[in-house]
Length: 329
Image 1 (cartoon, rainbow, N blue to C red):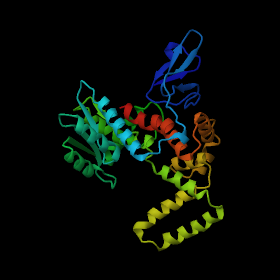
Image 2: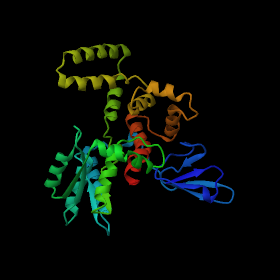
Image 3: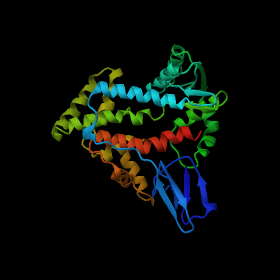
Image 4: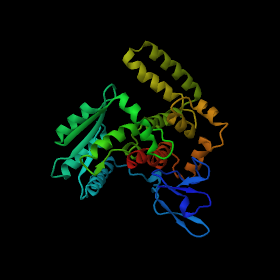
């Protein structure tokens, strides 16, 4: 939204498309607005005002009736898609083979009279290519589907241009995919719906499974965990190759069970050994990640680590990563 420098004059405003709540800074004396906020500039000061925050519910008063939860969600989801179909310009959908965008496509097909225009990005040399599954979905729901495939050479040529559009350091590699599929879609539509953000608001990440397991394992003494870890080592050794990766992944997750929630969250987020990241950051004059999370969770009313994980994703991952990635196109 807006970068603000210290002791501002009007000529010192810098536009951007991302959010970090003050007083967190990426650059000296430069701040960013929190989501759902604005600022008022007067002669002698800048005042920050919040017009909306994500509501927090009492975790002990969550709805327990699954049928009611499912019915309520289906109604809200359909209404959400319907509202976003109000457009006087051509509208489409970014379609992967995931549940998020697939559910949106299914709902759009019920609400739209004309065929939906859907767009998918794929890779010429990747096992992660989702174009085949996306094309099957498009065929089933009768959408007008267009696919673009990108190669490593194209990524190398465009990487500098892609990164420059964010006006700040941005490390989500999916920004490359979004760049190309957006460029493709812009030739046919002016507005697109996406499934980005579904994992944040519907607990779709594997870290939620980790929190469930952690809650279970913490009921046992640590000695049990040590024996369990040795059992996993034996199972990994004896298992066929197609199961070794799954068991190894579970062991990696299990090593975090007895850590604090903040430590688990940071280790899961890190691309490599978090202890090494901490050692690299120590000499730098910056806010430590542990302190950062402590500030974030100072506004969190949830005690259950599962809901704290959802709070973290909804307040940090969603605005800082997902929304920035798709809204700055």
